[in-house]
Image 1: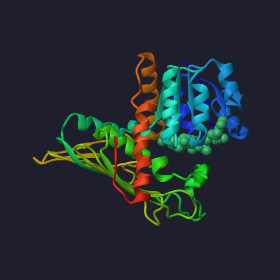
Image 2: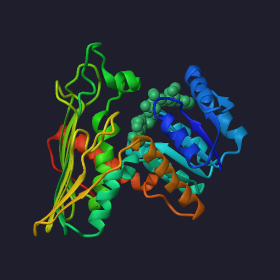
Image 3: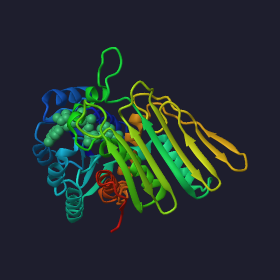
Image 4: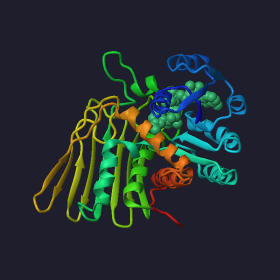
Length: 346
Ligand SMILES: NC(=O)c1ccc[n+]([C@@H]2O[C@H](COP(=O)([O-])OP(=O)(O)OC[C@H]3O[C@@H](n4cnc5c(N)ncnc54)[C@H](O)[C@@H]3O)[C@@H](O)[C@H]2O)c1
């Protein structure tokens, strides 16, 4: 397998190290920014380096293109690549409107290009474990869930008064649909994975931090066939430690995962155990191995993609599947503006 990576910014480290750990060759890198291109190229000893992705794709005979750029570049890059390369891995959010998504799904089908979105939270150890527990029916039919994450991520913190979000990923400063599309989409996707397709949605999406253009506070309620799911997602907390909790209540008991960084740890590996408590008094504790989980989940996600390529399957998070997740985010934004409950499938 010959992989070419487009975009050598913040998250490209997890992608390139993931490929290496899967024993797949990253043969070429591309970035508009020469400094980033050379920095990653030197770090991973990749010799072929391009500023123009079209040139890279034409010259390198790639089996996989890994698109690790912000969403604004996705439509044109994918439009070009899908008729020339058989497999595309693309970062979330895959598109920022349904029209581009529908267009790309059709075009990939036409050229028989397998395309998978990096909805990487599905491979976080605790979400993988929760999915297993739900599939085993240990808590019976789930009827309520809450995923809550509070982080002071776009408010200046510490002695240096830095805004951590913007330091790490400067493009977030000017993203219009920020919290819910860039990060909340992971939780919306997890809910679809756990509870099936949504029926209707209500939302409050707002901006608190003056340091970003987009939203940084989202409270979304989704009705699934059997389950009410709530996402409470904040990047704008003042003076509070990161807190994340995932809670699921079922007919026979509940699943709880929390601690400092339960649902989506940022830059730390501290987590609690996953706790299952049943009506009959049984209490089970599943230890979570969070060591280097952030990079490992990319490796696991790529492994799934490689398996799908080898066995001619569609990935779990194909672009077609992912459009349904993005539809939830787009509807949530609209539901918030219109102060309406919005339905799916109409
Ligand atoms: N799956 C996850 O958990 C996860 C985590 C972090 C970031 N992301 C996503 O990954 C994407 C990239 O994020 P990042 O933080 O690495 O961004 P970044 O800004 O650090 O890096 C993006 C790089 O892409 C390059 N680029 C942009 N357009 C290009 C083009 N046309 N050709 C070549 N290079 C181009 C930029 O020069 C930049 O170096 C975003 O969509 C982000 O939402 C996903």
